[in-house]
Amino acid sequence: MENRKLLEVKDLVVHFDTFQGAVQAVRGVSWYLKEKETVAIVGESGCGKTVSIQTVIGLNPRKNGSVRGGEVLFEGKDLLALTQKEMREYQGNQLSIIFQDPFTFLNPTMTVGEQIMEPYLLHSRASRQEARARALEILRLISLPNPEETMKRYPHQLSGGMRQRVMVAMALICDPKILFADEPTTALDVTIQAQIMELMNGLKEKLNTSIVLITHDMGVVANMAERIYVMYAGKIVEHGDAETVFHHPKHPYTWGLLGSVPRLDERIQSELYSIPGTPPDLIAPPKGCAFAARCRYAKQICRKCEPPRIGFEEPEHYAYCWLNHPECIRRNGVTVREEE
Image (cartoon, rainbow, N blue to C red; front, side, top):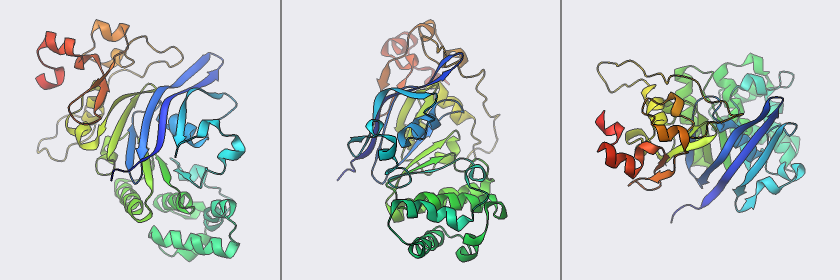
């Protein structure tokens, strides 16, 4: 039996008002997450991936941020229609998040134990003794050494890897249905990165939690995500299962992301690819394809008209790129990627 859709984001549009104009951070994004599934949203800094998940969980600043359109359906309920008070019942309880920099988000004046227990006390009627027992249970589950002693320490007394594990414990203590991981390994060395990713994979199986992984590093998602959404300039530009996106990518931006990852299966290392230029100004996005100015294959139509969604043979594999349009392929004979 196929797992049902747990979360579905439909045509989400998010703007931030500035003195220069409205920044169109998310421009009609749609994606979904099934039960017991790991999905990755991949893209460089500023593409809108973090804004999209913070909108889902209700964490975007209300002073200048506004949702201009779309729906966020969690188990059929539109989260965007809830009040701030109603949304608190979901935050940290049904929907939890691991932030990018634990040292920034952990309170330096509170012990680690107090901070782990806090969401459990907030969302349940448990006593402090029960909350402490639950916190110790979670710390043992994530294999943190000496959990009793760790709970008495302050964030500055822990290593980077231990602080990240504490963030994982805080996110999981209420047994959420969805765990959002926003660049969970950015500030860690390669060895600790692997440990954190392995930990999250193991916890997903033990706790039946679905995961949305936000990252700019294609290497991080290689052995973790089942499906990948590639995001650029506030839009999804390609989607498919992980194997398809890695082995049969169809968008030039995806090629660039993959080309920037070192290959361990090659005896002679080729020079890593660097995508030229910078992302477009989202106060005044370009009329056509947002990637056209940085794409060496861009044609005249790419700069004038937005590319349509084009599907491929693999199930649910699609990309927004004129190079894959039947008329473009007919004129050129083969796609650019096949020629290389």
